[in-house]
Image 1 (cartoon, rainbow, N blue to C red):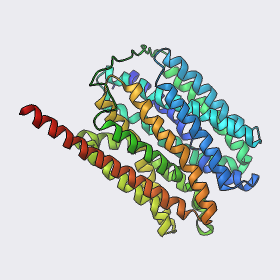
Image 2 (image 1 turned 60 degrees about the horizontal axis):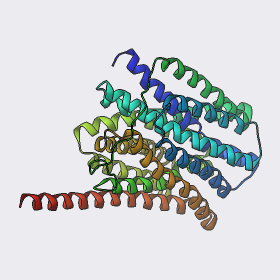
Image 3 (image 1 turned 180 degrees about the vertical axis):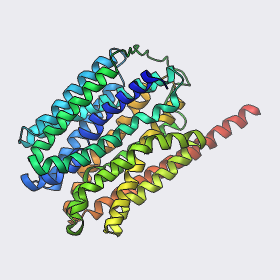
Length: 394
């Protein structure tokens, strides 16, 4: 990779830092401070989170239909995304918060899909597809940044100043990306003519989409409430912010590491390992509430959730190389739909059982179900292909 290629990838990483690590996931470490000062319940927090994920669903779906002026639409989306972050610290009205989180979600979905497809297409054009996984490290980097910055800023400027500080940081990242991408020319994408080879309703793809949607439903419960859960365990309260930093630090190298493994092993085998590790990470706090168990759970969560995103999108793009934008959009839309449901269900379970353990058990079961769907779907697809091949040979 030359300097220009690295600049394009790094710019993409920074855009995902803004949209995912800050706009989307900074809510997780800020949530305990907001709840403490404002005094709303975990159920209300779940609705705020789901508002963001509804927006993410809309944005991801919308992005699949954007074929022209992708760079311009992307940059405008980033501007609105950054504004939604800063305004969270200036306005203390619950109904406005719901709208701001919705805007952050819509623009976040657009940014994720457009950035991913633009960078992957650019790298494929220059025969550098093996580097595509690196762009997803922006998610982990953003989480680590928010995990470090939130407690430091909150201690001096409260949670309102934290949102403003993160908004200013996002502006800096946007300016850097604008400079790095100043010479990047993005061609309009063309709608691919439908044929038997472009249908995503056939073969393994529907199973992969369903599995990915269930993953979105399960993982987001830990992704939304992890810090708040730890913050409300008196003996572990001091480690709540550190746990989110661990998630981010584990997520940063996970994308390239899983991508390297994808070159050596089948995607299904690697995804199997990632799903199993994630289930362990989600359920560990249910059975053990020690410092080490919480930090290990945080590490496993960070290691796997970005990995599953990277592996699934990369594998799907291998199946449909000429439809990268639509493939990423379709997968992300189902993923986002699962995320809408997760926080609401988790909030209800916590309210009913007065314990976070029920929500985590539910999350673990759903992620394990996602794994089963993927494995069963793969087995049935291979069996069907074998029968069809045998029929043709006869």
